[in-house]
Structures are given as C-alpha cells and as structure tokens.
Amino acid sequence: MKKTCLLLLLLVSIIYINEGYRIISEGMLVKSTDKGSLSDIAEEVIAVPLETKSDCRLKYATQIKRDRNELFLVSDGQLYHFDCSGKFINRITSNQHFPVADYVIDPLEKQLIVMDNKENVYYYDYDGALLERKSLAGINPLKAPTRLMYYDRHIWITAQALSPSKEDANKQCMDQWLYKFDTTLNLQDARKLTAADLGRFYLGACFSTELSVADGNVYAYSPSTQPDELLADTLYLISRNQLNIHDEYSSILPLCIAGRYLVSTYSNAADEEQNYTFCYDRREEYAYNVTGGFEDNFYHTGRVPDLQALDVYNSSFCYCRSGEEVKNAFPDRTEEDNPVLFIVRMKA
Image (cartoon, rainbow, N blue to C red; front, top):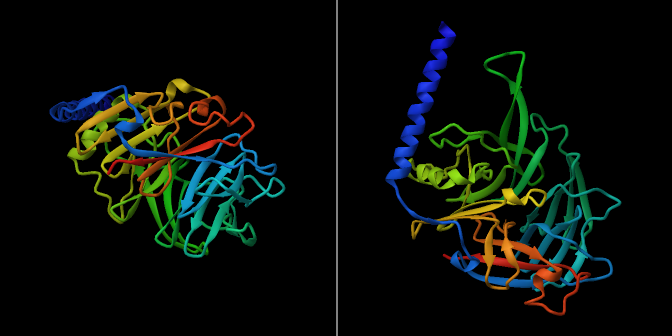
C-alpha cells in the first residue's frame, strides 16, 4: 500500500511538472524553422586549405584549436601543427608513441599539454619537442578523464567517478565531476555536476560532456538527446534565469552559450539521422532546429552537421571538407589533398 501511494505521488508530481513546463513554453512563443543556412548565424566563413605534404596526409581533422596564428588539430589520433594560412609546420606526436585522447594549448608557456587514453599527460613545445611526461592515474578521486580545457591559467577536466548509491549502499552510481588543476596538474578544486533542471524528466549528459566559458566562468554542457524538445528547454532555462553562469555553476546544460546564440549540435557519421543543429537567437527570439545541419551557402559544400567550437567562448566554430565537397570553391584540390578547414565567425 505504501509503495502504491508513493508511486501515485510520483506520477502526479511528474504530471504537474510537465504541465508547468508546457505552460511556460507556450507562454513564451517564438518563431522557429527547421531550415537554415550558415549566413543566418555567421558573419563570415573563412576557408583555410591545409597544406599537403608527404609526411602530412590527413583524411579528417578534429579537436581543432588555435593560439593566434598557430593552428593545431588531431587526425587519426595524432596531433599536427599548422599556421592560420594553412601552411604545415610540424607533427607534434607520432604513431610510435600513443593516440591523442585530448589536449590543450597553454598560450602563456607556448606549450601543448596532451593526454593519451591511459591517463598519461605529455608536455610539448610548439616545435614538437617533448618536455615532460606525467601520469594522472594516481590522482584521487580522478577517474577516466573525458575532456580537457585550458582557461585562466588552469586546466579543467570533466571525468566520471563511482560513488555509493544513496538508495542502496551495495550499489554504486556514476557521477560527473569537474576538476580544476594548475598547469603542473596539482588539483585545485572539484565540483560535482548534475543535469540542468528543465522542468521535466529527462536523461541528461548521455553524450560526451564538453566544457566552455561564459561570464568569465567555466560550465559543462552535453548535446541534447531530444532535439525536438530543445526550444521548450531553452525557453524554460531562460525563464528560470539558469543561464547566469557563476563561479560555482554545477549544472550540465543541453546547449552551449555562443554570444547572442544558444547552440546544441550533434553529429554521428554512423547514424546520420541523429544529426542536428539547434541555434536560438536571443536577440531576435528566433530558433533554428535543423536536421542534418545548416546549409553552407558561403562555399557550397553541402550541409554542415559537424560544427566544432574553435574557442572556449564559442565565438567561432569550424568544420572540415575535402574532395568533391570542395570542388566548387577549390577546383584544383584532389582527393589526395588535405582537407579545407572552414572557420565560422558568429554574428555579434
């Protein structure tokens, strides 16, 4: 009887929460569309043809980061260095060492802090010289690092850690944590992360948790698994003032803050039907929720489902294309040439 009453109470609570969520969402009507072009959100798109060399042949580029005129990217698990004109400078890592899991740029020391998939960290200078190697494996309670970010002279890492369940002491729960280290990997702070309140029941942070900066503070976000709900979720977050990022912010948002825009994007080459880009323009109160990504009407490379943030503030995004996709803009490039990097500068 007691369990039945508790179950009924839970169902009633869920109904009331969802009803409140619906009322708030419908009370803040905004225009929206399921179509969009890059020019709707981008001030400009800059093309950077990556130079092709015998010791630098890339199929695709990810984890693209920039320090002024220095450009770094990962391809096939290895870290490469270009300048912002696309000129190949050098290869930082090699296949004989390890595959790159993630890395950050320390612009003050002009060094790259690179993590492998076994919780080892390597320090390189921009010329590719290995300066030092450290291990994170002995740092308690850090487990299974997932993402790195450099900001404010510190390294920020999201990770998962097991903790005892409150309901059952014999069970353990997987929690998300945000850790703050100095650049020599001394732990400075730890913060438990939880899914943001969206006024409804949902499973948050199912995709990888990313890090970003807004209002001078670090926060985490994970693309939504329910893109059809993103507009209502966004309006709910705005109405509850949950986008005010402070120094102890611990919610995992379903989107990132990109100046005037709120953006959530997911790309999976193995299941293209899941690909989407959501973008809410706070100035115009207009929402784009585009399956398959925005249409590239600058260089006509097709749809762009794989926008990647280029900086911690999300003021610029980027994507790569090669072969037939860049024939219109670069007719001389062949399938054997390195990709063209496109940098998307968002409207202010």
